Length: 311
Image (tube, rainbow, N blue to C red; front, side):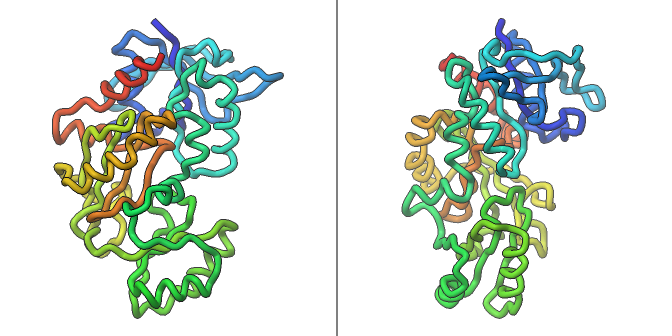
């Protein structure tokens, strides 16, 4: 039996039927390990020692009764065999600071995913390191470059570089007069560049989420946007459908898989529209429960197999 710490947002408010962290916690228990839950704000670096203020945790797949906490305590995270870093983005300085703190214990205490690699792999930037797999993309604050990109590609998706969950994603059609105003708004809200991509009409057929475990594709779901919506994210009305991976999707996974494995990115979710990958999600990927329901897989077991192989 080993101690496994899970760094995540409040477990009290999770969606029982959709949360991937809960599935990982349940599998942790099934393997006989003890769970310790703490919030990101409970993580501290004290005189070079990484400590966490939290509580022992027991989980159940039972609506309205899915967790029990023990008494609050502070533990030295080097006592844990593994830390599951599962808090949701935004990928901001608070998130980045947490990765720096967890660097002090990894890999002696295995952090999933590797905190240095998480820090160096923001979703919309990491994908740019794999030529030929993403749609035409521009990352900039230069208005002239943006307008030239629009002249070339006409139909655009504009989104914040460090956004998440579909927040702030805009479809700018060729005749849309709001691009300049949108860029002014983004400039007021964010210091970072924006990311602009050629709009892929194939999104109407679905934005596919594919999960890779230790660099190997293990399944996917197709998320179809609701009528009148450009985003396929589930919490904005996207519908999850069963799917099989295409030869092109297998090709994309084979291109990125070795890098994910080398960088200690054990649990990764990628987004694919048509023939193109648009994001690589390494911070807190989701989709386990949906894939399990559609194809009878047990993604959390595969993830824990990979974790235990490294312990």
